[in-house]
Amino acid sequence: MGVLRKSESRIQRAFEGLFGRTFKSHVQPVELAQKLVKEMEENKVALLSRTYVPNHFSIYLCPQDRQHFGEYEDSLVEELQTHLLQHARRQKYDLVGPPEVVLALDDALKLGFFGVRAEPVRPSNVGAPGRVASGRAESGPAVRPASSGAAHASPAAQAPGGSARPVGQMTQGISADVAAGLRLARRTVHLAFEGVSREYQQSRVVLGRGRDADLQLDDPNVSRMHAVLYWEEDRVYIKDLGSTNGTFVNSRPVTSGPVKDGDVIGVGSLKISLRVR
Image 1: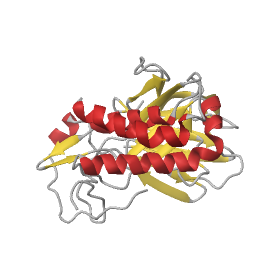
Image 2: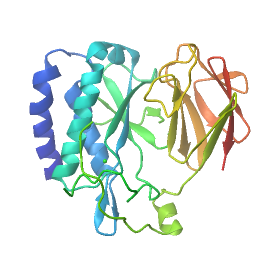
Image 3: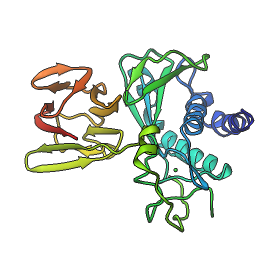
Image 4: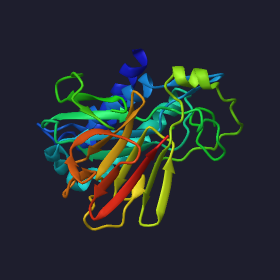
């Protein structure tokens, strides 16, 4: 608790001066920073002599809050990523890559409320050459919503910078049984469309036209952050991220729900075949 209090004090000083006076009833940048640090702390994993923390975070906002950030979005994301890296270094945590923060829409959220989701650390990524070791020299599970003036609320939505020195040595992996117990076991989602084939072994896969999407789709009818596939209790779910033209499963419109091996996902003018194993 002492760590978080000290961190929140630093966040307050770092963010309030830059953004604090711009936003009133909307989500405050300092609240996002505080919640990101809390998610990093709550999702750390101790493996042998090191403590690893997540490096990929998704922030879910209602359309009004997302629009309100507007021209500040790039600067805000960069500041949040930098702050996460600095926090990890201060606490001597290790990351599997530079911190990444992605903003996404969730129509189920109200003004002033937001959700933050950290992608779990996976043994397959730990100790890989070229990754970042921050502390030496980064629903799937339900989004934990927060609001202006309220530290926590019950789950309301599901989903789902900086320089550092590379890891100097490989870290021993953990057994499959331990990984399963930590809910870190690898799963594979295979997506195929128009001669393109991609496989993903991660807890969530964002589909969209933007550069932040995991599967980038060159289609003008696809939104920048269109939809997300994610694991929960060993099942795959899909959630539309407030796209303009909607998301379809087997030609039926969906906002969120489970998908299975063999389903066809429709985004824009594309039909994407899903294979799960």
